[in-house]
Image 1 (cartoon, rainbow, N blue to C red):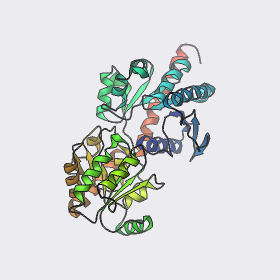
Image 2: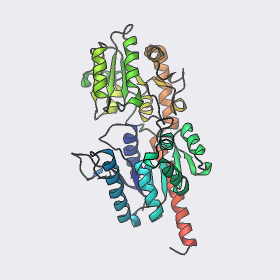
Image 3: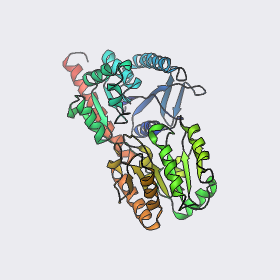
Image 4: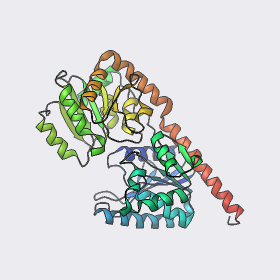
Length: 395
């Protein structure tokens, strides 16, 4: 029997975002490698309370559409109840982000003894650790201290996150450097013929296509991307910017597109079912984030062989090397972003950067390899627990 894993996450598809995508695809890959996975996430109206997604059991708990305090409290209560009920059928818990999923995991770890892995997904002022440090109303100090004392291991997806964990007093040997991964079969380069057919199917116009995929949220800097686009179309009037995803900034971004007169060159597509098809139909991937952990969307764009232009934040420089896979530019700098996109649209550099981008992701960020590494981590924790219980005479 394979390892039995509980994934704890506040966000999960059909909600759009890097954490959502990563958690689903990772869970599917773990199942493919022999594990049993149950995802405990928040319930939202219109979604089933329980379903199976390609072998992954998904439980949606609590009242996710209620005000924040109620949504958090009901998720905590129902997820803890579920973990207690399954305590003899779980080997390890993996909590994504250091808010309610980690709180659930910490309480279950203390009460039930099930090993807990904590996986922060962002760094900097809006990242997990720094947010908790300045959030006494969320018992942030207690959460950090409880994590330091009770968690069995931490997954660091980037060097800045590892450093923040170390600065919080977490020992180096409890931090595993395991990056986010990408499905190299789904996200792959398109031949010229495939790209042409995809563009026709998706209704894309002729001319260069630059695509962003992710949440439409302040931290993603899509407003900055639009300002850069207003500069770019002066010299590339036939170019089109495609924005995939939804989020709290969608209405404001639509207004900005209209105010800047960009309606003919910017398409906000909302959440789409087939992200790989849109990326494979594109010429360049763009990411203007203000903060990042290690962006899954960037990995996906690069895996599709797209030259990529991204801001130098969080773990992004660990993925994309300037002048090798695309362009790294400062955040909050529309002129630099516009120039980076223009560079990537040049046929010579763009083709070379796209090819090396695919090679980079295939060599270092395969979802298959990431899942295998996590299974090694989980297995070690289970062995430690079994040994401890045996030594204490409880097995």
